[in-house]
Length: 137
Image (cartoon, rainbow, N blue to C red; front, top):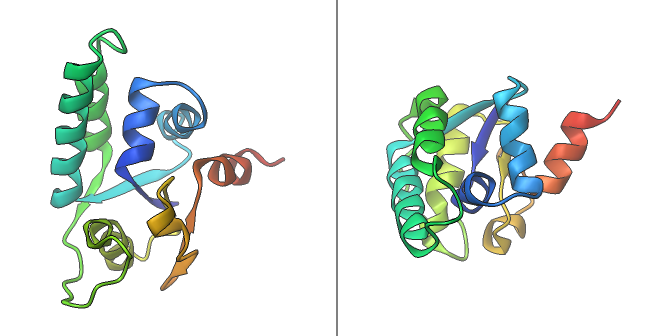
């Protein structure tokens, strides 16, 4: 299953607990394959560095886990378009990566992405819906 993971889900899963952590546990169990563009990887790293500097007590191994996640990603070259897709143009990198791989899901907690619901063949869903889907009997 091809998945594009928004930064907010990845970083929350690495630093804090809750449903985003469950999404990452399902990745660690081999339930889904992450896909990302280099722009996404740069954003992942920037945000992890900012948050671990701000909350050093949150995790000791945040960068190590991020590096493990990124190493497992299929790095894609996203489709290029001048057209704005999301209400927040900075979120377009996730949609374009999903389109370029024909991803099954874009998992996000960002309302600017979630309001789209689906783009191309990719469903845009919350982490809780993604976990319910993968854990259903």
